[in-house]
Length: 396
Image 1 (cartoon, helix red, strand yellow):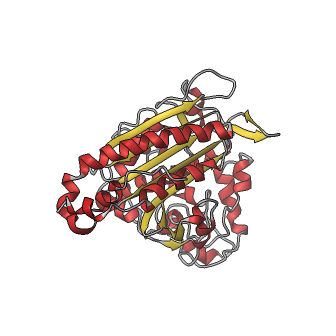
Image 2: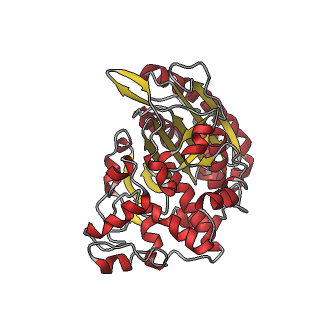
Image 3: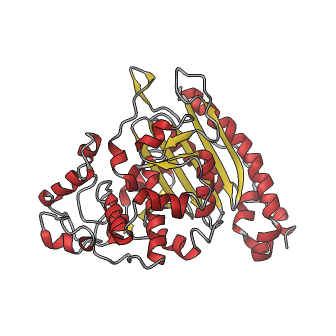
């Protein structure tokens, strides 16, 4: 789908052709005006897709640099309810939580609490694989880049069954690695969450308290929290919905993945996620430094399978995982991305460094339409028409 987006934005965003660096600053106000015009079209498209799929509610935010270009909620928090989704309605972020875990880890590393190359066994000495030697060589960098060498989604079935994290960890001595750490990709939730005991052992503080102290509070993310209880207790929260017999049904919040705070334990509103995006775009260097952000989005491990994702496969030619972030080659440009999916919720976050633009989408239903929403937006931004030569010439 094309919105016939105004063609100047593409060239302005990249400072293309003859107006290079000097135009980057002078063009910024015009870029934002054009992006706001596009955002109006995206808002209509977003609402139409919710209605077409019968999704109870959702919210999105479009950010350019340190400015929120558009932010809106549509629909209702629960299918049978009357309360609308607004900018402060809290959703489960699911695996978008991994971006928070990696950022907190990076900040603590900047404070010399530990290093990316530290062995996990230093902090979790009882953690073992069937090949005991390999567990001794597993590093912090490996667990946050999903390159532990273990079969993908190991013991997620136990997470969904609400088995406690320590009990699941104790079972890895029965798992035989499929490659050496750092040599292959295998997406993990349980192993990713080993960062929590690393952080707590090295700081003597709880993971949740540190996240609030060093990330959420400094960024002014007042709606955000970690864990099940704060989510349930929040009056303005979205309810989860799953599809059965052709209809969406409100279901109870499943607690399992809340046992893995780093992998899937963060709750946030679209208002707070706009602040998170601004920080990822470099707008809060006192909280997340440029060096840290660049490190988190550096390519750590090849993830070829991502090029076959529904909707995304039309655009992605290559893919990697960094530290808490995916890196997609989207046409000629690079897109930093993560998705989230937990019972009754879907979430997407992505940004382009070169365009300095970000998009966040939160849904209170397990619908794959989120892939279409995200790719439609980014196709328009990254692959939209270039401006005609006479318009470029005016910026000499």
